[in-house]
Length: 520
Image (cartoon, rainbow, N blue to C red; front, side, top):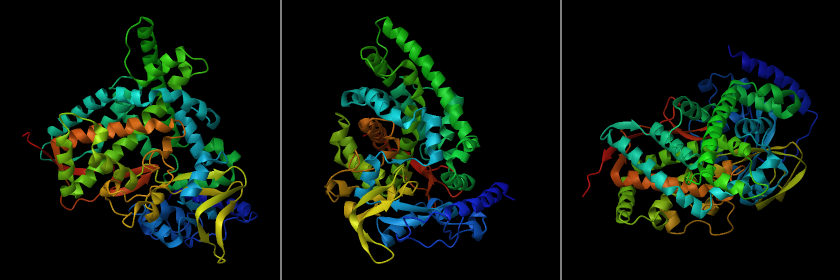
């Protein structure tokens, strides 16, 4: 018997008594009906071994057989703003309207849900009021000139991946572990100028995302209770097992960072070149400016700097190779473009390669959705009006302090009004044929929100380094290998804080048949 679920259900009774006194401001927004109270609406209770009485919207939203199959259907049915029921009857807005998303992301009146904010602090070591100053200081490492300095190391890592793939020629392999290690090496090179980390630390870093707080049924229930009783649950939830790993990894990475920074400072004081990594750039900038980061502040950010792009980049590359395996004709055209540029490589000058990267980011955004809570009463504008359950058409939504909302970023990136009638299909040519909306952009790269989840701590232009990394690795692999899907193999898309490719058992996996291409 799952006693944690039973305890959460009993605590939920007290939540009901509390919430029944507060009439929802969202009650007239349409949305799917919730036949259950604790989780919301669930069509597959037997699959999750949960009695239907204790199931609801959040399980169907977060844990369907294939991520998005319910969310995207609801968007088509109800529009870009609709209401779902969270745990214990809490009402929550799902928002993919571009103007509403832009308003929420730019406003200081919205913040992470209580325990997500605690998780961010546990890993990143910063509070919200510090983010602006940190972003400004970190920008020195993500200027166009700074990003160009990372190219040589990214190319070295890409060759290493290529060598390892070459050893498996003709075999069916899971490419996720190899891509994960490569992305972590690239992140370590970018931050430290050191490509290899301690094996135990690497293992712990690679475990973080699947264990991120809030992505089990029990933790989702605790989130629901904590949203109503933040003072009571704020401290208690920090001692859940998932937080222990966050604290452990952050302490380990910070210790490594302090040692590396001490060594770099000693080298620089001797007048020698210590490299082109972010640590070097930050310390040089700090030593010549007032009000910049201290040594401790530099090392305190290491956990986020290492972690932010590693998992997302690896997953994006895995999804990309999966799509190449599905479309061999497109793969050949992309390889022809790559080979035509191999003697003089300018990554930004390859339209098909860059269109492919944009389309992978659009279809598989790492931050599929993000939770926010209103810190005060607010009015959210809409780019398109919606009809309420009373038949009234409204162009803005009034919300109250404490109202919950989900920024439905994956849904936003499938809006037909922005991406065309085939928005649900993988089609890189839309970027070449200019079939995407050309209006005001709300995302920093190609109007996409794929980099939104790490923008709280990193400068707006930090995505440049990740784009270059993907360009370099894909260029190397597509030039030397062909990829195809094994017969009867199926990749599931699951949400575990970020979108991940998994096999039928829920293990992170993209299995591909890899064949080396003979040089001509």
